[in-house]
Image (tube, rainbow, N blue to C red; front, top):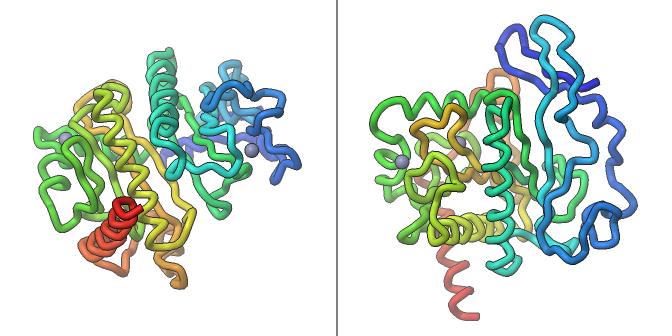
Length: 307
Ligand SMILES: [Zn+2]
Ligand SMILES: [Zn+2]
Ligand SMILES: [Zn+2]
């Protein structure tokens, strides 16, 4: 029943998945807690097939022009046995296992035939389209490269890496860093307080060393704490990992963190422009955002060292 349809005006693929309409909006029993039928209670971190998969390996054939089978894989990484746990606050070892498990599965899926891009994302917070609040992330093995990744891939065609040569050289937009990872506000962020996290110049995150991965995960978690310090505990935020689309080429893999708010009280007015033209409007200087985030990061650090 599901299919991919290509928008005849923009050329972008849309996943049409009517099977998802039947999924419960707030299920009575958490499907990710120990005791739920698909959960192995012995494992702290595990991967499940999506019960209402937008993509599947036995997808029905295409229905005509600008249609393609919704062939792919959609899986859920259950990050903890505890329902009220959170990626930013769980023990460091466990967070590392979450990324280890997700990245090895992503590598495996990326090697499968017909998979053009493996996408990782996680939403935190009720306003971000989360059906189940139990901490989890999602991995989609897609038969096409999403538009955003196509655009990013294009930026790496020139010799100089835009991350290494531009983003990482601007200290005014750096939020936190150690020898193996940096969190920064990009030169032209699309969202208020958007942060990117990078480690060494590698096309795919499953290629970075253990040491780099642990710095990278620490930087992601510290960025989430920083956002919480600024906007309040457990601020809704989307985290995504961007790797090189196929064919694997020059690319600097990175994480992007997108908080849902400008601040606790201010409503954003640019949504109409974003929705209607995919053009983003910021009412703050990215360098000012970075300075504010640095202030919040410093106070998080002070608290960590004093406790
Ligand atoms: Zn649960
Ligand atoms: Zn680079
Ligand atoms: Zn990106």
